[in-house]
Amino acid sequence: MSSTGPKQAIYASLAEVAQALGHPHRLELLEHLGQGERSVEELSARAKLTFANTSRHLQILRRACLVEPHRRGKHVYYHLAGDTEVVMLLQALGRVGERNVAEISRVMADYFRARDALEPVSRRDLLTRLEDGLVTVLDVRPQDEFSLGHVPGALNIPMAQLEKRLAELPIEREIVAYCRGPYCVLSFDAVAALRAKGYRIHRLEDGYPEWKAAGLPVETAGQ
Amino acid sequence: MSSTGPKQAIYASLAEVAQALGHPHRLELLEHLGQGERSVEELSARAKLTFANTSRHLQILRRACLVEPHRRGKHVYYHLAGDTEVVMLLQALGRVGERNVAEISRVMADYFRARDALEPVSRRDLLTRLEDGLVTVLDVRPQDEFSLGHVPGALNIPMAQLEKRLAELPIEREIVAYCRGPYCVLSFDAVAALRAKGYRIHRLEDGYPEWKAAGLPVETAGQ
DNA sequence: ATCATATTCTGCAGAACAATTGAATGAATA
DNA sequence: TATTCATTCAATTGTTCTGCAGAATATGAT
Image (cartoon, rainbow over all chains, first blue to last red; front, side, top):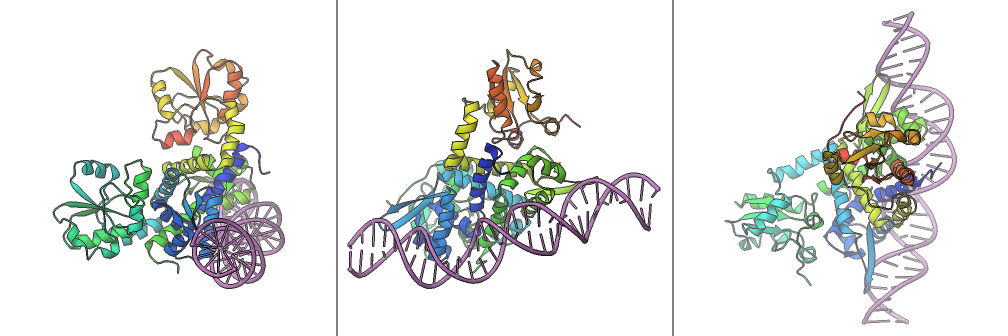
């Protein structure tokens, strides 16, 4: 009654992958891993989970072949297994959610749309405007995430320092801000804060992982 | 500790959607629903599940906003909620699985590749070859699924009748066969059977739902 | 309106599985 | 060896799957 054919075997495996996505904590872990590799310690701090629990969730993601560990020094670093496909899977999940789940549209409207009334800038748009040098790209993620990879030429001002470092942002140029992904609040908050100060600023659709997964050029500064 | 912000609320909802995908039976139900709407009765017969169990699983899919019911006559028909996005989500899931999960590659190699050594024909390829009239398209799904929608101009010979109806297939023309999707065995078996008889036949990548989700033209014959 | 019928949904119960934490164990370095 | 980081274990609690039986709902005929 179980394996009537190859289809059942494949669906059993795919179900395991899907089930690994089926927990909010794991989705958040994947969001963080989308920025680049992270140790268990770093992940547990960022996701505000206990150490043991983080490890357990990572095991589940690992068994589902969504992430892979590799040891370096004392730490075990995890990264997305084939990040393009995984990021695209998460994007597809988000699209279904945004289209079908009323709760999600509601939250998006309540929280996000209030801070950025206008449509986000598409990746394609940003790319052409970048080539023409007409726009300042602002990366509001923490500096360590920035250094793991970012949009070429982007200026990194972590959200926490934004108020103090306004001088670095030319008010006469248009700004496009981005952060971790479609559900990360950083770039929404940046747009709200800078709009209030008179900047012409828009949000990039999604975030850095999706930019990279789309095959667009990235830059790695840190090391 | 739960809703520290809008992100948590969204990930909670998305996790519910993902979890609904996290069971082999539900993936199979979605495969069938990808062909078009079906009643609970039809679905339970096709998926070989008990009635009650099918109903249960459909509830879960419904709560996750992946399917929607509507009543017509005595039956409750279910269909994919926004079929394009859902089919694309399943495609993305499949891509991750095929790339990352060894078990899936193994089954694909063992069972599927053995029956169709060559690469499948891409949708784009088939579309141009269709326009030039250079190819016969063969739909090997059951007739009722065919009548719910199919590739324009396709010839429907259900797998069960293939041996008897060989006369309808011109041996001198190239044939492209398709069925329900990437994990449906029908078109693989058709390729194996017809290759053995000297036909030049290839498989279309994926199946009908993916063709439709790609925005390509479809035809509805039945009624 | 009411009844009989066909179809679908829900409650129950048992088994199996998943999430969480703290404690114990393992692995790698200094 | 001691230290640091990660995994696994033990135990608790909660959730999911499944079949069965019975309840709910809609239809169509009376």
